[in-house]
Image 1 (cartoon, helix red, strand yellow):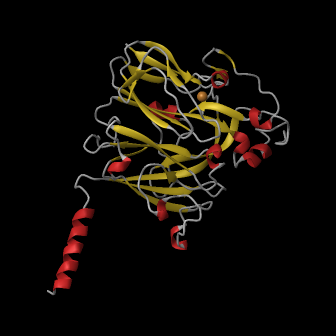
Image 2: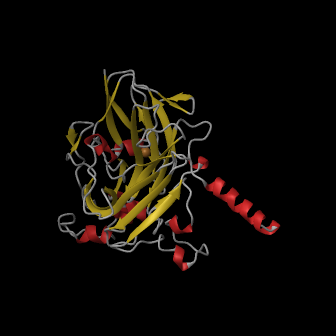
Length: 359
Ligand SMILES: [Cu+2]
């Protein structure tokens, strides 16, 4: 072998070793569609915090129900069967399915767009190339790498994301961290339309088979989000639907925007988030995120318990727009407790829920 050829062989061997994945690395496959869902911000029809009627719907508020485009998990690539959400996960509400991985894994999201809008899947934190970024902008991508930017109605696209060390917990993080995925085809209006979900990455060697962290008994994801239906790309459908807009309210009506925005936890208001239940002494991990409208500043607060956030003790954390924070709780105080945003105008608008600590 010539010197040049053996040098090439050595380089190729080096690349092969460097790119070899650990034998325990998994490919985590998800089948996620964007579906048109009739979402109800207060499905009980009551204010469950106050045991009272909901605030009266006054024009130009359309009501509590709106068409939304939401990410939903399916069982396989045929996209014929919705993957049923466990009752204990009903609290995830309008969030898409939790995408999990351990550092070293690969995530493949096969996305089907069942809506009439062009949509995408854009992740935070994980590693992707231009064919899996899910965001259209002038980045010099060849045409062959732009199908991910905007998946057409009825279209299917597979996004492939790597999970290197820098996507997992840093030195000051607990054993898992939170990212998000959302549609970024129309960056300003997509999230108001609905499609957003959580990604949880666990430190290498710390994950159970399903990707969840071994040193935690119970996990809860809570997105504090100002949902502005006046910005939704489905507002024409909502205005046209006589069951939603029987009085033919016009979007040009004064105060249409503030009347049709909701301060929600996972898309629920006034205590309609299904009860979060945990047991005294459990290791409970809270994943908090905020959405990306203009004023998504929130102060999630737990009554009756405290949490540890990066080694610091607190019972309230501050979230800015698109923020994510992970806090650990060992609940010690049995009872039914409030979990809410302590910003006054958000609290008044129903940004509150409850959790139960069993003895
Ligand atoms: Cu808030």
